[in-house]
Image 1 (cartoon, rainbow, N blue to C red):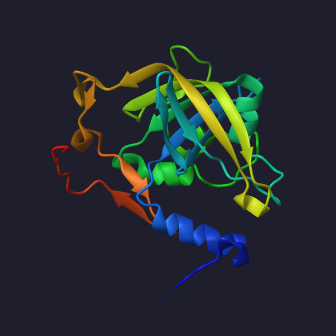
Image 2 (image 1 turned 135 degrees about the vertical axis):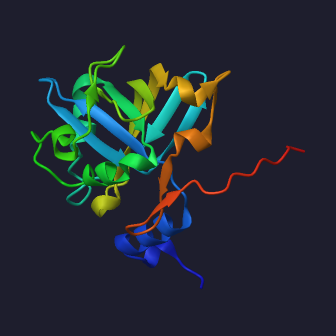
Length: 202
């Protein structure tokens, strides 16, 4: 099948992309607004952007014809800070529950039963159950597109403090099997790590 993206609906393009770009890592992002109200939401449009400085990036989609930004983005606009929490498979259900659409003043920590833990360098709490937490300050934000909910905001965060459970890390290397992270696939599906193969580089 040959496909011209310009002739597709937003939903058709969305289905093609999330079914093709797999597996996608998940950033469980915790923020707080200027009054200290907490927010927690997962994002699977997420990756590394740079290592010097240490930058991660995620891309929250917008609501309502591309004009309504998510609470996560609004909070980062207000405070310039957030935490990227890397979830293990044992909290998959709680992470999924955090993806709901809630009132702005709702506290997803309370909704999901996840535990807030004070951060070292930023004001938003991290997620205690997550064995890797990256405390970030906003490095750059870019608006991308404006069509439907397909419009998004690119949120680049400079990692100012990094936490990893001692059992996961040795010589700055993370043991993937112990982390037991999971990924986002198409539709309602999630994926586990599965078999890991090591192949020497040429």
